[in-house]
Amino acid sequence: MHRIGYVLKVYPRFSETFVVTEILAREAIGADLRIYAMRPTTDARFHPELARVKAPVTWVPRPTNANRFWQQVTASTQDPEILANFASILPELTELEASDVAQGVALAQRVKADGITHLHAHFASLAGRMAWVASKLTGIPYTVTTHAKDIFHESVNPIWLRRICGDAAQVLAISRFNEGYLQKVLTDTGANLVLIYNALELSRFEYVKPSLPTGTLRIAAVGRFVPKKGFSELLGAVAILAERGVDFSLTLGGDGELDEQLRQKVEQLGLTQQVTMPGPLTQAEVRQLLRSSDVFVAPCVPAGDGNMDGLPTVVLEAMACGAPVVTTSVTGLPEVIRNGETGLLLEPGDVPALADALASIADGDVDTPALAEAARQLIEQNFDSNFQAQRLNTLETTEAP
Image (cartoon, rainbow, N blue to C red; front, side):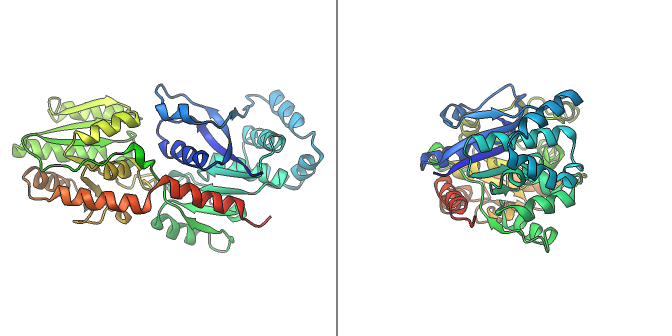
C-alpha cells in the first residue's frame, strides 16, 4: 500500500491553488495522501475546494525555546533507527535553525508512525529541507517540486538546494525554463530532473469564447502584490491609456506587501475611477472576473532580489476560461503564450509596449477570439490535472527502493 506524505510550509495557503488542485486530482485516482505542514495558515480567506480534500492534516510542532527544542528532539528520537540516523546527519543539521531540526525530526517520527512510503515536498526551501531530514532519518524516499522563489531568489542557499535536489528520487520542474536552469545549478549532484507542469482541474474552468471588445476595455490582473508581478508597471501602462483617451477599466485582484504602495500610485496617477482593487479573490471569483473581462494581463518582471515568477497558475486559468492574455517573456511564460498565437508576449518592464498592446486590443486590431481558442487547446493538451496526477503517481510508486 503506497501512502504519500505531502510536506508543505503552510497549509492551507490562499495563493497556492496549484497544491490543492494537485491533491484533489491525486485523490480522484485513488491515491492515499497525508498532509504535513510546518506552519499554520494566517490567511483570512479560503478556497471552497479545500472542503473536498480528504487527506488528514498534521501541523508539525515548532519549538520556540531551547527547552521545547530538546523535549521535541528527545521525544522524536525514541525510535532506534531515527536516533542512529540522527547522529549520521548531525554535521548537516548543525547548519539549520534549531526549530528546523526539531520539526524535521518530529516529521520523521510522525511519517514513520503513519506508514508513509513516499514524501512529496512543494518548494525546495523549508518544505524541501524537512523532507530531506525526514528521509535521511527514516529511509523514506522523497520527491520535490521546485517553483520560483525557492530556486531564483538571492536568499537561496546553493548548498542546501543542491543537497535537497541531489538526494531526491526526482526533482520536478514546472517549466522547461526552470528545468534548464536547474540542470546548470545542479551539475554533478546526480539530480533526476523531470518536467511536470502545474495543472488545472479543467471541469472548473468552462471555456467561453470571447467577443471583440466594444466600449470600455475591461482589463483584469490577479496575483500577490509583490515586485515580480509587475503591477506597478501595469498601472504605468494604463495611465498611458488614460492620457490617450482610451476608455478602460482595470480590476486588480490580490494583496501583499505592495498593497498600500499600489493604492497610492492609483491615486497619484488619477486612476481611482478606472482602477478597482477588490483584495484577494477565490478561484470562483477569479473565474467570474475572467469571464467578464476583455483581456487578462500578467506583466511579470524579474525582481531586484532575483525572484521571478515560474509559471503563474492564474495565466493558465485565464487561458482555460477564454480570456485573452497579455504577458511577458519571463521564465516559463513563453512556453504557453506564443506571441500572436495563444496570446501577446512582450518584453518584461516595457511599459509603453504594454500600453500599445492594450490599445490595439481596445481598437479591435487583435483577433482575441482566435488567440483564446488556441490558448484553450494548448491548456487541454498539456495542463490537465488528471494527466499530472497519473504522472506523479507513476513516478512515486515505481521508483527504485
